Image (cartoon, rainbow over all chains, first blue to last red; front, side, top):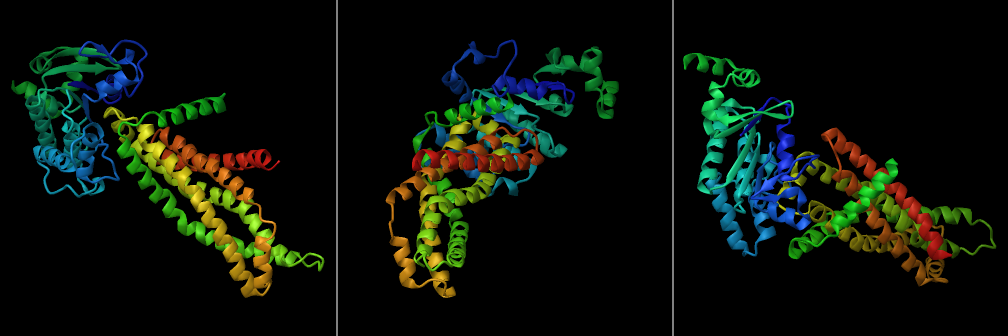
Length: 220
Length: 246
């Protein structure tokens, strides 16, 4: 998980990782393949291994829920129409979204949009899943549902998932390896247990910014 | 320098839009979809404007040909040549630049600011190819049909309203529209409409594709797309007229 204050550069870092932003220095490696040294086709091959959950969902407005999930399958496979629909329905069921196939994104709630976006991301069985603030704009209950879904899918499909968030509840719920970004730089890195014990001032200011977290610290 | 930057970026975008498609069948479906949205959806406005412009040109021509040495069939000749040479290819294209251009720029601009274009890129899809190529092809293929439709309706509108207003007779009008007809004029009009169609689809698409910000910027991109495509249509109208008629 990559955490940090708003404006610290989390989303910029994520966009650099997936090739949406150009980098000035450094390298992005996917299984020893340096993304920014690859040609157009090489980058395209890596992108086929990537699934991404955007902050706003980024669902295609002109397509229904089912069409949104079928779309990447249609682009990169030669499955029949029935097989594509079966695959899409399987993914939609996996994210607990049934009977919404014919709805348009404008008819969905924030949580439903995120679930469709997850279904679309896993439709082509990615090796890497990038999530940009999956909980933004969601109520606490729905946030937990989305967090758990991301965790379950990561384990079930054996994929590498990178989540960007500033929600400490998510860190505690699904965090594994955590990196803290401060003013555009990597400031701290460690496990979920370590972040709760660290004495790094900037990390502590961020982690214990809420009363709930402060109480938690006092209690334990 | 700013103009050179935009020219360079525009040509790179168009080149990318014409790259090999990921799946030809999907692109063909998209072309037909765009033909329906951009072409068939414009039939109504083109029909209304053409009929009324044909009628107005007829009545104005008859009003101005008061000299008894000018035969009345000249009204038919004027309507035909005005519609074929300038009104249908250029003025209808300007109207389409407003209607279709703003729709293209705002659609692609909205997709940009809501990260839908980023989502396409992440999937490994050439977003400019998927979004812009079908619009350009649909526009270039369908606009000449719209232009021929406009020519026909303009001449028909002139006939109906001219005869109804009593400014020209059936015989004189029909003789006029067939008198000294040059088929090359239609070829010239269709070449112009093809070039204008490319501008109508690609320039607003460029402005939409590079939208940054939110809803306000989408509106600005839409306006820029319409203004720049209109100016380019007028410039190419002059260039092509010079090249093809002299």
